[in-house]
Length: 417
Image (tube, rainbow, N blue to C red; front, top):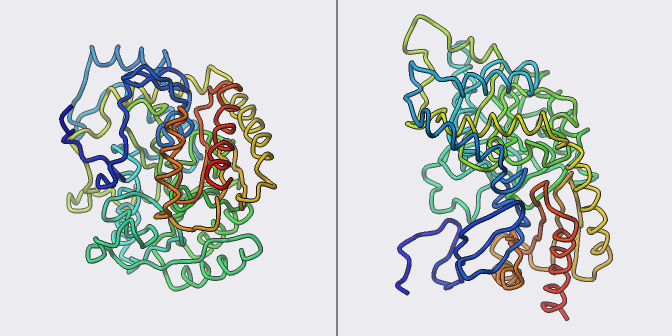
């Protein structure tokens, strides 16, 4: 077989790691070209919520593709987008009145940053500094890399990145240092603070309390700093509620959603904004319009998939499924609390995570070794450095979940004896 011409994301092809071909998927099960079954333990990079090939979403995609596949969204509209925007206004925090469509989590954050800066420009106030949190990750475009942690992910692109103000992650018993730093940065007239609520994903599944999130929101509001909630990963039930922000009882000024927006079936993102942010761009002056788009903004097929996802949330006991999965995850996590090679076992909703061994960092040699060992055993787990996490679709059966944790135990035993 000739070598594939594909350049895969987050892959060092020089290591010659195996890249299996997946030919079909159903629920939490993937099937390879050579006939093996693989358990999807990370929801195919955190996107698949209700399971692969959910019939409601599949039917909506097929029906919409036969009716209207694509239409320019600048100056035109269509039914699936109108329905989705109205549904989101009903589901999401009440202050978020406006819905802007884009294509991915990264673009939804780019849109949020541009909205925030445009807001202050059109108000005639000189605010342009963005506050970020250490270890944060918001995407791989230039703006999103700028507001993410600096390191291996973006070292080569440093000349392109803009300056930000960083505050420390609120580790347990060190929350006050985070809040104090945020207060200082807001007092200096920052334009916006962007944060992943409750769980920092690619930064290591770092978790903090709803109380800290609520206090960060209060500080921003006290100083007029816009609060941007990046719920690209945490939204759609991952932390146990529809949004992680719900657990802190807060409403952001701007909200970023993607991944589970379509149930994970097809790319789509939205950035929702409060009315004052929209109003700052509203004018008879065309130079004040919001200058952002892509060719596939609000693609009708993707919007139809998102509408089907919302129908599932409204018609099926999704929250009950999430609660059951979270309880099962907690039970399995207990196995590792006293494991000699496991540190900092933690959970937020349907997400469990722990650190393995003494090696730290994304480039830990443990990552490719564990990845290969999990793959050989028929489980899709992709460690972040020496950190192992489990984030399965909500439909996963108890036996399959049990097999995931059995496999983790086997791998740890093989690695450490």
